[in-house]
Length: 369
Image (tube, rainbow, N blue to C red; front, side):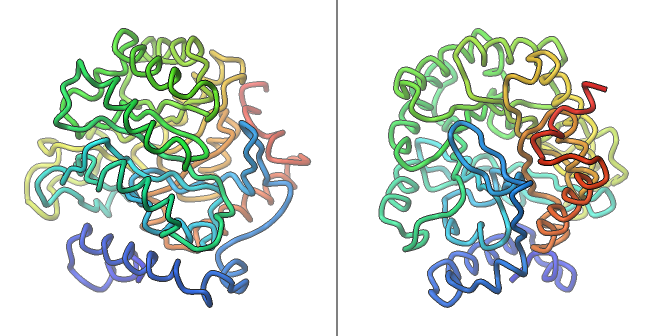
């Protein structure tokens, strides 16, 4: 059922493999023998109080979360904690259901340990996700880790109506997520990244916060391709609207560092392909953005770091740059479900090497030395 094993042996479209994996995980999440099997927890997870993080009144048993984009519709909520994750971020979900961009739209660039995607926020819509979470369709038992919900703009909604679109999604889902993320940084919805501009971001944040009234933590997810000055402006907006944190970063449209010359599926020169890059090529810039935000806010605005995390060293670099939590996607696809446990054990080893009592002590540590 696991993508990396199937992919290694079969020439199958990566999106088809993804749907296969999600179908299996959704089915497993409803099986009592799976849900209550402690052997699964021991196989894929690792519990240690030194890894626990508490943010926004939420307890994260460990800092490694599933990034948005993998479980778009909340189909396997009951399985992610079993696979060792300390949190999950569902979506991106939009107010209107939408099919996304034409296929093929998901490509593995194995030479770069990267993924190129131009999915286009394909999802069943906010109402469908709300009903699934409300009815407990994901799992008859309560989830054990925080659920984040990543909100995007519907493609059919004009940019000038974006605030209302985001607000409608939040209104439908506000009772079912533990924290929420405003995604204005995907490169795969026309014009979306322009919403990172302070003048366009402000109405969106204001609309959601008026509905929210401080009840749920609200974060914004930003692009790695912003100039440093623009990142500073987003941070200022986040502080002005009392956001709870920032996710750094989304995928990058910068394909210059790639070793891959041609798209393995289409044969098109990779530099001409539309879409965002995740994985190893994103690692350095995402860490730079984390460090910029941490320094600008003096570590007072929590950061979730995502981009190119494959190893414990990658995770440690993000954390010591200023990330309180991290998220993985591409690394998990390439390395499989044992990856989370390896990273957690590696983080514990790092704490021992540095003589630190908890992961909290490591957050932003490189900026203080």
